[in-house]
Image (cartoon, rainbow, N blue to C red; front, top):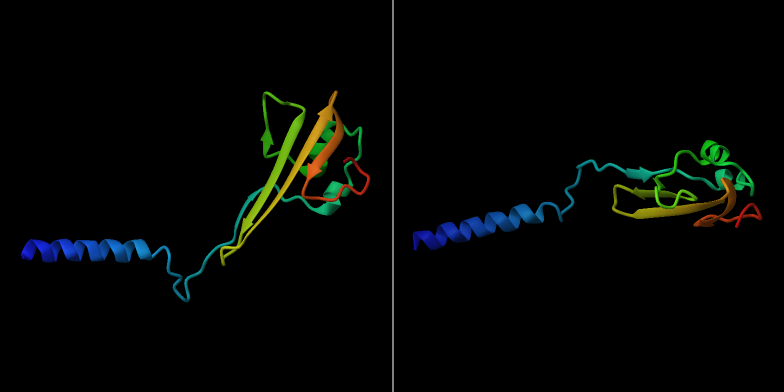
Length: 115
């Protein structure tokens, strides 16, 4: 009987501890979590076909992903998870031909600048 009580107590503690991550306690501060490169529409509007890789890096910053096997493609990714758990994501992929900007695609308007 005493073994069953101990086992029940241990199971109840395990359930309570695992529920702590699910419950949101009032007054507990949560951080906004940002990852990746912040890209704005103004930055994308500055992209023009024929820009060098160096010029694109100056405008957009260092790409989050610059694959060794595809050096003519740069990927920029940004995500923001706010304190309430809402996630916002933005993506921009830049393509080069002969080390010059050829086109880009992603979550931004091209405005006739490259896509």
